[in-house]
Amino acid sequence: MRAVCVIGLGLIGGSVLRAAVRAGRPGWAATTSEEDAAAARAAGYEVVESTEQALRLAAEWEALVVLATPPPAVGGVLRQVARHAPETYLTDVVSVAEPVRRQVRELAPSARYAGGHPMAGNAGSGWDAGGAGLFDSALWAVNADEETTLDAWREAAALALDCGARVVPVSAGEHDAAVARVSHLPHVLAAVLAAVGADGGPLALSLAAGSFRDATRVIGSDPELVRSMTEGNRAALLDALDDILGRLGAARGSLASTGSLNSTVRSGHQARGLLERRHGTAGVRHAVPLDGEHAVRRLREVGENGGFVVSLDGAEATAELPVPG
Image 1 (cartoon, rainbow, N blue to C red):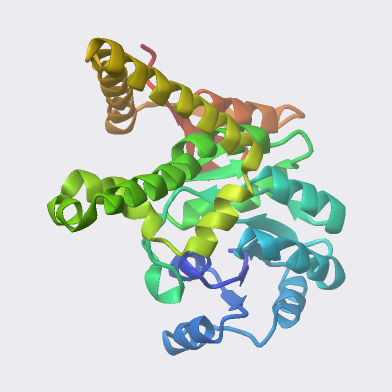
Image 2: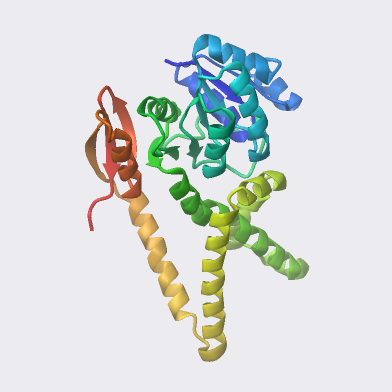
């Protein structure tokens, strides 16, 4: 099993290291956080003194390097990758794909790269918030762009599968457009909703029950992490915000003119039903050949059709696709 070198030991990076080691992979990490480094070492994990040392080990072991830093720190790490492990296998667990993809092409062009994004987490931050089981049964996007080589994609996907996840092959642009709606927009809405609730004063907050707590949970995360995540996907998030502002405006107009929210409530209820059925119903499994020049495109089509890869076996991947209809 290929060794794993994780740069960053926050919630996601720390969980990747734990899960990879749990799967039997050799693994080590580097972090700028002395607190996270001390906690990881105390738990028995190898944390080296610097990113440079970690990357030199990665070159020696032919390891898979995992970037697990906030988006603003990615460029600096990539410059060190180019210097110390220029041809390494490389992936990331950053929440935006296209900006990282562009930086890799510019700063570490020889790296064998396939970007990634595990769709898992919690409202905590730092090493202590993570765990080896964080990704169990979660979805993990692995970018399959035109320039992505099959061997780079396989290495990133194999790590995700070893961590207990299911792999969604997707282009960087399609990933960013999708997560703007289902991950980044919820953080913005949670921030606004929490502020509106607090403006209701002590009585409103004392009456806040499950629906309010659930809807505002994600804004309990570190504000700087939320900022870097949402601002890093600016263009796609603006499109999603325009969509929701239009829908809120229509809801307000209907309530003001007719006293009814029927259309808003029913369309939302229907959409939630689609989500429940998609995640509550087993799909149909298919073999996806991993040979020939169109292998990466075939993988990308799995993600485009709402499917995910559950295993890799030699010359094929096993994918699960939604039941038609």
